[in-house]
Image (cartoon, rainbow, N blue to C red):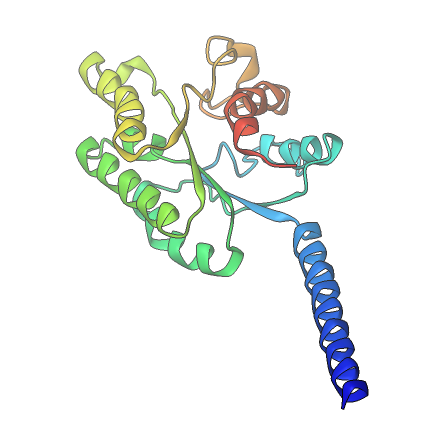
Length: 216
C-alpha cells in the first residue's frame, strides 16, 4: 500500500510539473505574438498622392521594428473618410484585428464639408467608447482646417479634439501637422495633402504620444 501511495504521489507531482511546463510554453507563445495597432484615418494616413510605403503609417511599422517593439500595424485608412464612415466600419475592424491600440485620425473631412461639428464630436466619442469597451487604448489625432472656413468654425473644430479626449479619457496628439502645416513646400499641388517629405515629421508628432502606450 505504501508503494502504491508513493507512486500516486509521484504521479500527481509529475502531472503538476507537466501542466506547469505546458502553461509556460503557452504563455511564451502568447507573449511572442505581436500585438496589433489599428489606424483608422483619412487620406493623410492612406498615402494619398505619394508612393506606397512612404506614408507615416508605413514609417511607424518600420520604427516599431527598429526599436524592438512587437507590434503589427493595420492601416484601415480610406481617402475621403468621415467620422460617420469610420464609426460604421470600426466594430468590424475591432472584431477582426483585436487591436491593443487604436489610432483615430478622422474629422478633417467632416469640417471640409461643413458638417455639424457637434455630430463630429459625438461620432468621435462613440468610436472611442467602442474601442475602450474592447479593452484597447485610444490615441486621438487632432487636426486643423484652413482659416477660410471662418474663425469661429475653425476654432471650434480644433478645440473639439481636446474636449473629446478629456471627456473620453483618451490620449491625444495635440496637432497632427505640427512643424509642417506652415511650410507650403511640404504640400502637394492641391494644398491639402502632404508630400512624402512631410510624413516623418507627422510620425514624430504621433510617436511622441504613442510611445507611452507601447509595451516591449
